[in-house]
Image (cartoon, rainbow, N blue to C red; front, side, top):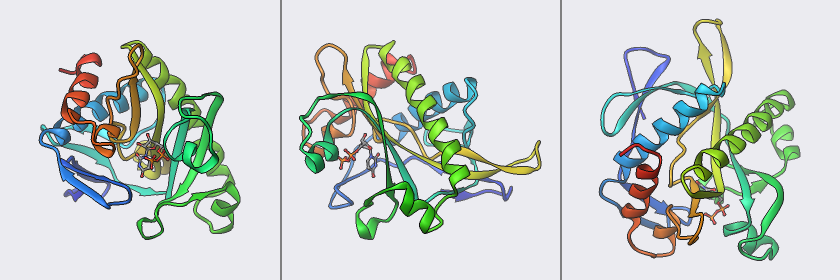
Length: 227
Ligand code: UDP
C-alpha cells in the first residue's frame, strides 16, 4: 500500500508473494499479482454495481489500483458454504459437507497470535467494532456471499469459502465516513472448486503443493471473462 498526493486515496500494489500457514510457508509465484489485481477489480466492481460500497476506485496498471483509504477493522470475516480447511480440523466436520446455511466466522487480525477465532462478544468487549457496525457488516457479508455464489456458479465454479475485510472510509459526497469492503477478493482469499471435477483453482494449490498454481488462477480469470 502506498500513499498518494490525496490524503484519502492510496495505491494498492499486488505482489507475486505467496504466504501460507501464518507466514511459515513463503514463495513468489510469477504473474500472481497481475491476475489478482484483475480478478479483484472485476469482483469489487461487480459488487459495487449491486450496491455494495467498496474501497475500489480504479485499476491504473497491471499491478496497481487506486483505493479509498480506510481504517480497517482488525477482524477477518470468513464465510463458509462448504466445510473444509480449519473448520474441519477444529470441529471434526467431514471435509466437503454442504452447510445448511452460510457460516460466518470472525478472526482477530493478529499475525503474532495466528489470527485466532473470536466471537462477537470479544469484538464488542475489546472495542474492535461496535454492535451497529457489525450489524451492517454482517448484512453486507451475506449479500456479498449470495452475489459471489451466483457469479462463480455462472462460470462453473463452486464458492467454498472466503475471507473479506472491511474498513471505514471517507465519503466525499456525503461528508461522512462509511463502512466499505476493503482488501481484495481473489483466488488468494477464496476457495474455488470446479463445479464438476472439484479441481481446486485457488491458493490451496500452493498450500497443499498441488502444482499448476498460476494455471488455476488463470482459469478463474478466463472463466470470469477477464482474459
Ligand atoms: N483466508 C484468507 N486469509 C487468512 C485466513 C483465511 O484469505 O488469513 C481464507 C482462505 O483462503 C479460505 C477461507 O478464508 O478461503 C477460510 O480459511 P480457513 O479458516 O479454512 O483457513 P486455512 O485452512 O486456510 O488455514
